[in-house]
Image (tube, rainbow, N blue to C red; front, side, top):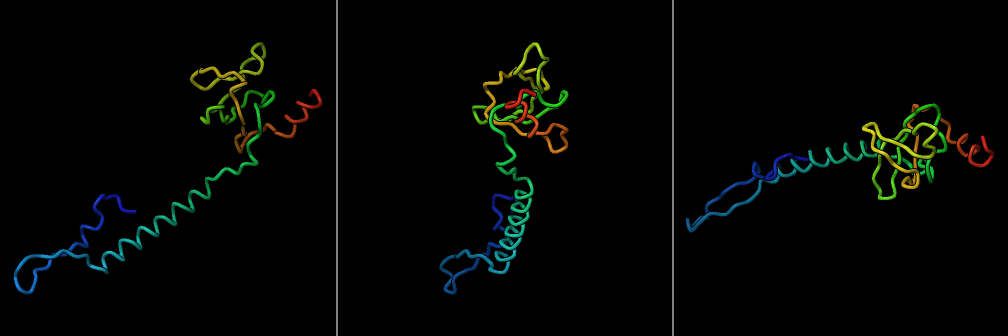
Length: 134
């Protein structure tokens, strides 16, 4: 998509009436077609990029993680829809989390969470821990 707010300006043409009574403006069809084709190609690129960045809903786990592996960071979706990257606090503050800038979040604020793709934490083990007391 063109960056210029008046992207069709280059296609604008001015013609004088045959009787000399004034001017009329029109757009050159070939130039307009070229601009539209370029915008369509850019839209297709952006759609493909968007598809690569899509996070399927199955990746999100409800609630908050139960003791992430080691001190790994995870992505949290808060109750207000905001997304933050969190890390578990030390054990004496169980079930609470913090951001890299030390902002504190209580566990009840976390609506859902997901691990980073390179994480060593396994969500299935977290489920076992919740049910089996691991």
